[in-house]
Length: 300
Image (cartoon, rainbow, N blue to C red; front, side, top):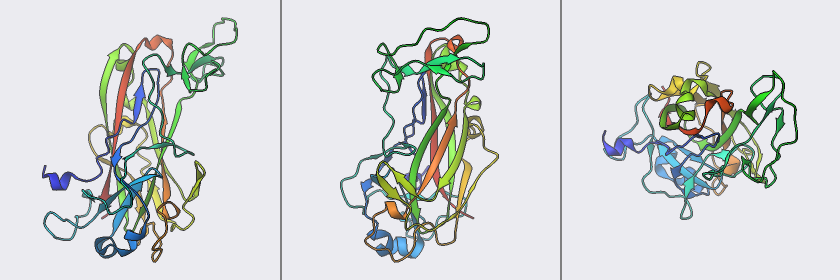
């Protein structure tokens, strides 16, 4: 693949790490942002561009093909990531954040595991969880479990099977979001037991709100957001990039003539919701590293 054409958002995404552990991490390369350039940069104004970030750092993608000085990326082809950023600041890694915050999920240590609990009604989710004594969201030696009686129906289960992650987006063009999934690693007996097809996934958009004390979307246009309802699990994305969502408005998300405004007021929140399979101690020990890679494409 021509490297200039490979500079679209192939996020260095470690979306779900399972070792009786569930985390989502999405990585981009970017710069801290004020949005003035979106209204003043010649290529953004003339051809349109897309900005994706985590509320602190952002990346830019556009339609113009700088490698050949031609316009523009063809329909159903990936937008091109800028190799150098006009955004303000040195920048850093862009991570998916835990929905409702601007905080990237922590990476667990070797002795920390997703919290388990007692499933009293056999629905696959813990009704009585271990007490998280040190409030680190992981099961470790500091946590405790209240006394319980052993009966036929109760079993051990994950404390929660839902994982919520988000990114922030603004644009002066319409675009599609594509996803591709892969299973990177397996260890022990636990890893092979977790199949991509058994991890549910869904995509939504939130127009405005406040995450981590920072408001977003107050000045954003309201795009038509259409999730691909046929995509319900990561296994469906394993053949390669598949459209998972559409953003349609003709003029994009960002309202025009907002020079000087910060990116966040002009951004919507893009949400990824994972549903883990029912897991108990019968899965044994080990880990599974499941990757979801997002990319952004020119709409037809």
